[in-house]
Image (cartoon, rainbow, N blue to C red; front, side, top):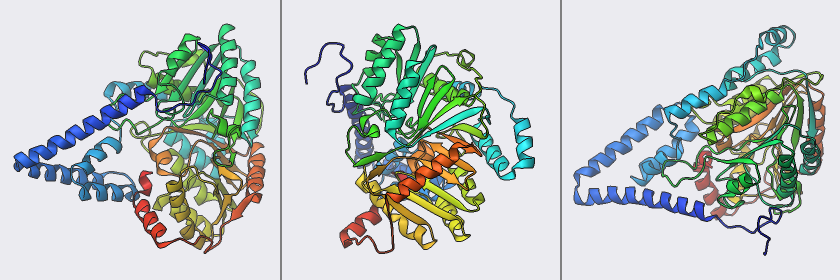
Length: 514
């Protein structure tokens, strides 16, 4: 495809960029060299075999004594003990992420730079709404976030609706625009936004963009951030791939946040790529959702963006006070925007704990939409227990998968949940990417959190907990509309061949690593 020099509106057909290919090759070579070196030492100096066994035992003991969920420990133990050398080398690469003391210090400053006194709101909730109080208190302690009122929230049941609304708000920006996304891909969606951003830069509006380096590996040129910088956009890849065999594939930035002038924010499931607005349809109709916030809760999402930007750009020293507006839009109800992510940035599992708390407190119903259903025993038990005590638990997953192996494990979760009375549906028109959790017409979560281990443990995520807000009825209505287009799963609906069952069993062993 021919294109003019500096033309940013033409979509290119991309493979993995050269920079990423070199980085992956370096990782492979480093990984292979270490393993080959250890094997050579064992062959020529048998005493090193004892050292390998000792390392293997130390790693196994470390896994057993860790605070991780047993569902996560077992596959790693299996892998480490079954395959010497390769097992513990893979463990060192993918189990966690090394974070320097300097980065941890910067993390602490960025995480705690927004001060707000929530004591009065909590005291009032404790008296008037004990269930809301317990959830809000739990979330504050887990994510070190704040409670907000005076925030209007608009629910958007499709990517197309979000696209139209977002464009209008971007065109009205006067001071700054922040974009923080897991995936940005050249095409109608992104290029239309980019044209607006170019106009805004020429008007003096400050524009900053964060995108995940691995999330965009096959979507953007390797040095796309430099292209954006040439037109005046401060762009930075998150967790840039450097070619080091030190688990840099882990802990990706899966957040999706737009901030406009510190007064308006968008979040939800949508990345900035064409399938999210059904301009392309690789998996049938793409069902996604977003919310638009206008009011004081935008401050918290602004803080999350500055955190991601500050971690990605070592030279950045942005001060939060410049971008916090304290803008209020009168509206009933409460909301808490929150972040989630890997240890030690977040010492406890924020989203997972909040979802389990909602399930435990649900009285009438709990409705969930998720593209993946790869859940550990703890979360499975929470869903089962809610259903067994009479709560109407319904879960909608895709009917057309984007990843067949993951879809196989998702379907493998159905039988146990259905035996406890949980109602499972598959969105028949295509792929449902929405991540929503609705409880009793009182509480809801909308954000980026999938029900899989990567999302609940490894990735940086974000969401908005909503309490007694008018928007909850819109979220519930959309769930019911999606359910009407979905197939209800019944026992015995899927007949599997023996080979498929065997393959699924093997995958299930490592389901918590998917």
